[in-house]
Length: 413
Image 1: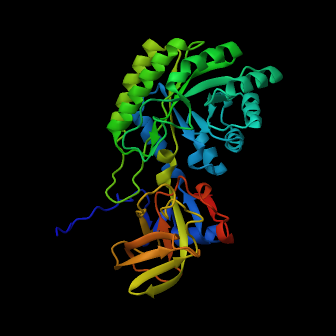
Image 2: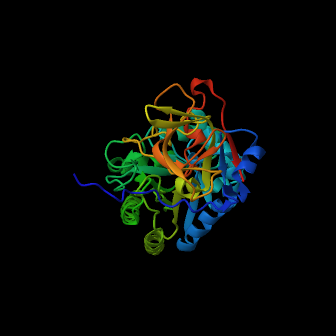
Image 3: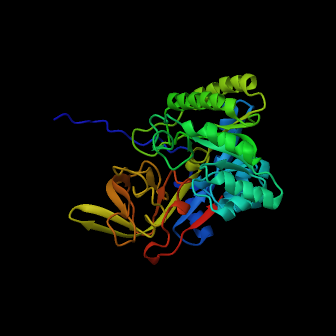
């Protein structure tokens, strides 16, 4: 049997600095931050890293392309307020997210509302707020026509298209094949005609082929196909196209062997598409909507070790946090085969002794593992385990009421 002497390792988590042998978030050492928060577990998000990620992306994106933040990645109001000052707009998927965005001062003209099952009250709120509604079903057209007549406001709409292709290599495919999202591309021409008859204010198209992709060439290919599809569909549009949302798909490295996405070729590709848009759809702005890529690497989940125990030669560090706060890190949020997120013991200096241990949560289920047989700095009761890459799909994507344990806190540092 061949033995791999060089197994894949996690990408280096070098976005956070160390001071005095401790991880820092927002330049605050971890033990001091835990005392400031007042309890564990907690999520902490670094303002400087959030600003830096947007700045890095702006550097490679053409000025003509608008950058939107997708609230579903992290809807913490304080974080949304910061992002509102950094991006051009936001994308929401519920009336709750819409309220958070508007409370943060986002211009309603730069907010889009997506979702395959919008309730009548949500459609009414969206029209009254003046945001762009991504139509995902023929049902929404007559519903929006009624609301528009009642309020005396023409609903601003775009068509979310379910394309006949998918984003290759994406962690989650959002387009291609039968999907609850969007309108199948072959049905779009007739839908556009009904939008025109209903007197809705048509503005453009929304295409989202997939998410969590680390291959620049796949993202570029999907963007090219999405643009070409929007250009073709524009021939049947009831009015000039003013917006083409090409979605996102930008991933971050979570698991061993994964490397950070190279966004330079994506920026170059978008520059070419922006040039094409000026000729083919001169009134249209190109939009990309990103969530995970903007906030995911700026956050950590911090939990305190309550117990150190050995069971049949396997060492477990039992923590006060687990899958009820961080479902994704436990492997129960879309993983087929469980893989470890990058984890460390945040109050232990780098380069010290290590051991192979498992991080278990406090819940009465074998699914409650934050790390399984992972090499970590030697830790004791009272130390802090830290899960990196936790700025997106963390607290809001986890079953915090499961088994009645206390909720976690989120802070922006």
